[in-house]
Image 1 (tube, rainbow, N blue to C red):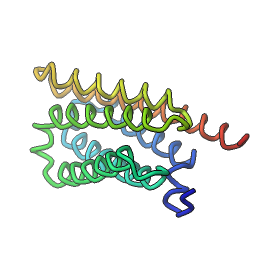
Image 2: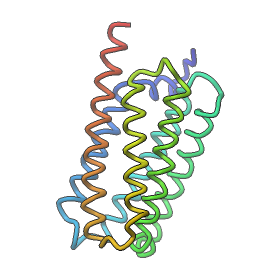
Image 3: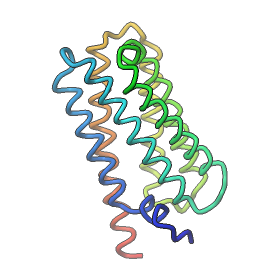
Image 4: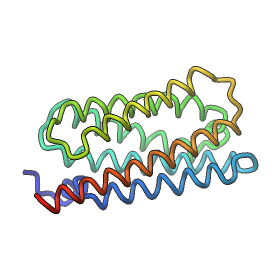
Length: 183
């Protein structure tokens, strides 16, 4: 078993709890001020992508084997981190490309979550991970299929999705906590 501090953190229920709470707060901000703060929204999503990148990189260290799931999770973490930093640095471009970036990212993130869960049969909360991944894919497809959505609608949709993602992460954190308490 990998005993590094980063690997222990990635398998901890607290890590999932924090990620869920950050997602809920980010989503609530997007829903509360969708119109007048599109620039802030781009920065908020940049921060969310950076947070997700760090979350995925730490998560890749907690995967036990060196298989494709670990590699995909690490690559996705780096891509998310770079996209987030770019989004924060180039805010106006981010506002214009937010729908495209989020659609592509959510699809890739969703497929990665599904493949990682399918690759690890003993993963705690495996069903939740698959469900979250499939919802990510559907959210990404929705954004890519209807590019005519206004930025206001996009910010509401994205905010609601982040709140739902955060709630599911809180459920996963609880499930991991319960399974590790009795293990």
